[in-house]
Structure formats: structure tokens, C-alpha cells
Length: 529
Image 1 (spheres, one colour):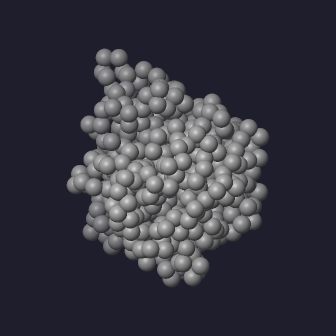
Image 2: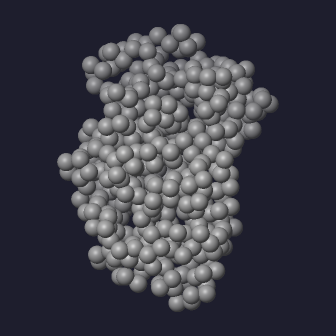
Image 3: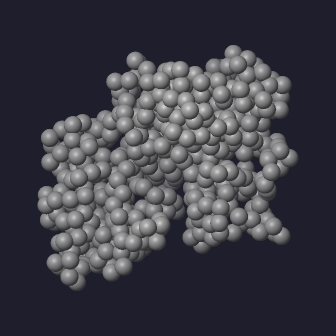
């Protein structure tokens, strides 16, 4: 661990642990962080305090003449003026200067050597340092010795609150990002996921400026790396489960960039949900949560230090972060050729979207911008029937440009590389939630296998009467009556009423994007809304 001078940032703490290895961070967590433990598998168990998830409503973007015209201002990107950003940064520096020691982690974002950013994280908790050492790409000793000035600096003073009376501050939490100064400040939240998503937000601004598509998706490839696929999907759609495919190599589970010469993972680690985790359900993830990994907000058996993955008394958002090389079939370095297939995963609890449909480029843009899935009764308090959920580009909280910008890049790359786009429903069939049944995972896996094998590229299709998409009518090892929703329902009138209701929800949601897309894309939505 080299001595590091941070005085140019205004930091003058006596003890700075620069790129401390995992055993040192473990020791410091046990000694200096109340509640931290080592569980039976060897992972570090840490707790994030009051905040056990992200705070998207508290994200702020510095308004600056150089980027102002590019930013999609609104609920996702709320403006922060220069004086308020300076106050937040000064508040963070004051807190960090008051600590006995600081932890500095240097790493890379992006596996592609030509598009790699040098990231520096400065924090006061060893848990946060270990988390970002896990999630960033870990430099070699030679790379660290030549690291030099970082491209982006993250100041995590999350234990210290924001000034609530300051302009633009809505709570004690503030996640403030300056695209021009390449700095991010975190106040009022110790949830580690804010750091990783802050880096992703920066990439979501920089990559499209270079004509590259940053994506909130998982990615896999065949053994050669010449045939890859990307899987978009919101929580609960199967993005992580379907990317953990023993027949394919894992490129990454969450954040990628589609460059001019292929795709690459942004991160050096994975951040998986741990609720109900078991060696039977997710063997690769279960074995990855060992020494060097971080388990966040889980409950331990105090006698044997085993994790109770079913206990959600702290939060349902229990998480595990681990280096990607802990997954046996991970492809290192995490790069692959251009995708031959793009999968939009949706869990349609209304049961009216086909299990698999082929999309035109315009339909792909429409559904990409929509980012649809649904929640079912019992998942959240107050939900008594299926509810629609839309998140632009399957990752609205992390976008900077208008969603149309990302959709245009997707369509351009899709056309250039002749990629097929598929809408895959992992939700219900034969009726809505409570009447129909969840599509079997075995059937969804058969669909994904058929896509990867090229079987569906020329499979027969029929146009869906409500959404205009081409429903595939033959998939090996999937019953044909399930592939056309109207045939799977016993009550045709109920099917049509439900389909019309969902189509109307799509159309209503898309109104906010009308001005940012072409007429062709606007016309690619539902045909009977």
C-alpha cells in the first residue's frame, strides 16, 4: 500500500490505506465497523444502515453549459446548480477529513482497453472499499504503478447527511454528479450500490458521445466469444437466472457497452440479489459468495455464522457482490463479438404477451424505450392485482440522454450487425396472475436455447392482434398452444379485454417520449390500444 497525497482535493487525513488488499479490509471491517462479521463461507457480512436500497429521487446532476443540452432533465435527472454542488462536496470533504483513516480504491471501468476509465473511490468504510474493489476491474501491479490521475473520483461520505435546507436537497440524502469535473459526492446513504450505479451513470453519458451504446443488461457468449447475446430486463424477469447458463460463457450480469468492435462488460464483479439463494437454485452464485465477496444486509445465525438467505427482517434487497472470476464459466477478459441476438425480458403478469416474439427495428426501439414488466399481488404493500411497470431502456434511473438517443444507437447497431431482437415473456400464460400459470422456466430456457441455436430466426410467426409483434408459433420442446396467448386462454373475451387494457397502458406511457422519436417508432406500438 503506497503513500498517497490527497491534499489537492482538500483531504489531509493522516492514515490513508491505498488499494488495501482483501485481508486488510476484512481486518479493518471487523475492528472498526460494528456488526461486521465473517460468515461460514468466508464472505464479509456488512450492513448499510437505514438505507438498504438506492435513492433515485435524491440523485442530482450539476447543470453545466457543456452538457446541459444533452441531458434528459426531469424526474430522472434533476438539476443542481454549481453553488449547491460545491456545498455538497465541501460537506463531504469536511466529514472525510474528520475520520481517523480513509480508504482509497483505484480501478477501471470497462474491459475494452480503448474505452477504459480510471476510477478512484475515496471512502471511510472498509466495507465500501471492499465493495468497490470487487465491482471495479482490478488493475495489475504494473497498471497501479502507472495509474496516475484518475478520470473520475467518487467521494463517499454517506454516513454524513446532506444539508436539507440547501437548494435542490429533498432529504438528508444527496447523490450529486458533475459530468464536467468528473466527480461524484455521496451524502446521507451508506448503501454501496449507489457507488456502482454512479459510475454507470457516468458511462451512460460518455459512451453515447462516442457513438457507443451503454446498456443495463446481462451478456453471454458461446465458447469462442464470436457469438454473443444480450439480455435486458427489470427485476424479476429472469435476467440473472437466464444469463447463468452452463452452456455459455458469462460476459457480465448487469452493465455493458456495445462498441464498434463488439461488446464489453463495464464491471469487474457481479452484484446479485441474495434473497432465497440456495445451492440448488443458483449454484454458481452460491459458491461465489466466499472469501473476497461482500454480503450486504443479510441475517446471520450467531452460533455457526451461516447466512439465513430466507430472512428478510432487515430488507428484501439482500445482496452479494463478488469478483466475476468467481463464476466458473466467466469469460476473462469480459469481451465478446457483436451480439447476434438481443432479448428483451418481461414478466407479463397479465398473461397477454406471447412467450416469444420477433421485433422489427422500429418495434425494438419502441419496446426498448418502454422497458415494460409487471408486478404481482403480494410483492409490495397495496398491490392486489397485476400492475404495469415501465422503466425506459430497462434502466431509467441511470440514463443521462433522452431514451431516444439510446434507442437510436440500438437500432443502428442492430441493423449494422444484423442482430435479431426478441421479446421474451417470462411471466404468465393462460390468464393473468391468479387465473393463469407462470410460464415454466424449462420452457423459457428452451426458447433462449432455440434463439442461441438460430432455430427461431426462420420460425413461423403470426401477428399479435393487439401489439402488432410477430409471435413465434413453433419452438422445440415448448407446447404450441402456449405460444399464442389467445389460444392459451379459456375465456377469449377476458383475453381481449385484458390485452386491450395493457396495450392502452403502453400507449399512455409512451406519450412522454413522443417528441424524441421518429414517426416510424411512434407507429410501432400497439395496434389496438
